[in-house]
Image (cartoon, rainbow, N blue to C red; front, top):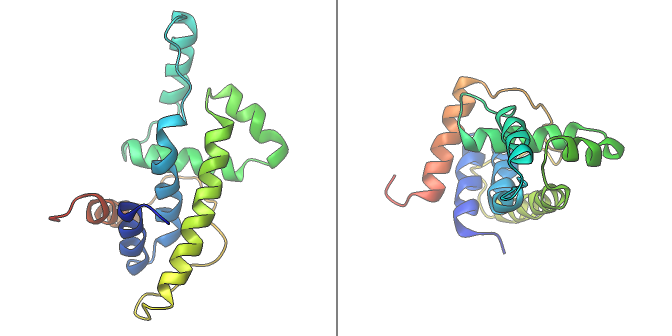
Length: 153
């Protein structure tokens, strides 16, 4: 079963036509505590990790940064992913888990949409554009996140 808050996020986004971005973001949220490597002992390594994290910084905030990381990971050729992840001090295992989780979320959405004819189903392939989301899409995604994670919005 999919996390209820992520489910609400994805359904809200699907009603706005941006389900694929929400599926990817939801998967990253579920795995976000394991995405970044940390170093408590080595100050030099800690600064390298911080610089790598900052390289993903976008004006949209942490959630859009997670989405950007996931999209770059998916668009990187499979044979180069391990090297890219190592270079960026990310967890290959966590990103692969997010990829699997995105598949599960997408399957759950497909099942749910059979009972919700007013919402059109997204394509079965992920949109791998890893550029910055356009302003209107960012706002729609933010509204979907709020609907999923805050009850009184």
